[in-house]
Length: 357
Image (tube, rainbow, N blue to C red; front, side, top):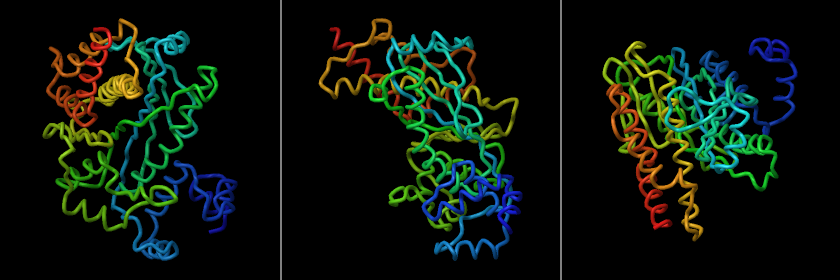
């Protein structure tokens, strides 16, 4: 195809394709552009895929599946900014009024690639960026590579955004971190045990990626994903919280993957996001206390966010509520276990109690 025809085929501008071509082998398109190219390759003929793989010098093309994979990626970038900074930001935000027990406010912020991005600021001093990015990857490996590459740019973006919102020098703004992601699988070509394995792989994408390459994370050989989907994949750190006939759901060391089979009976995406936001906020809150201890300081927080606050948080996250379903309880247990938050809450609670004792 000519440059213009190829741009029209992909649905992008002529200038975009010119930038790709002019950038040479060292140029890396944006994540959304990579997804468009991956989709085009997935639709190509077997002969075209073979020639593409030969041109790259790889042992095989990325595995492609017959069908359409649709995944909504939910990223969470938590950072502890302190109670005073949180108060300043929340003064210009909308308070959360959905019954959440952690007092917070939120506001939408612009992100260069996300479909939607909301900054949640909690009164206890934690802030969490929530990015929603739908994807139609040709294979799970493509999504895994995108995930690691995009986090590398999203974390400094979040810090710069905080700097602008706080109107502070960049050196004083704390660094956001990565804890867990959330993948909502809207559709996929798999059935039976293969579908189950696909969700497990979504919760632990590192098994599909080589993160040690000099140029950044790269996909493993095509046969890896094919073999795992064919033979199954499991790991002791993966925790299931799905309900037969209702949902398939896993929490792993990298995140949560969920597929609904019964819209009326399964968890909603808002319920999953709400749990993640709570866990992420408390995770970075306890991380701040841990950092004080490791720096040789006596950890301290405002009285309303002292050890009693953490004791109450632990109870709320580990005790079933009267109106909850078994799925809600299983979800919290799985996320608490894989994130290590339960242990962090207890350790932070002990540290704060000792510092005032």
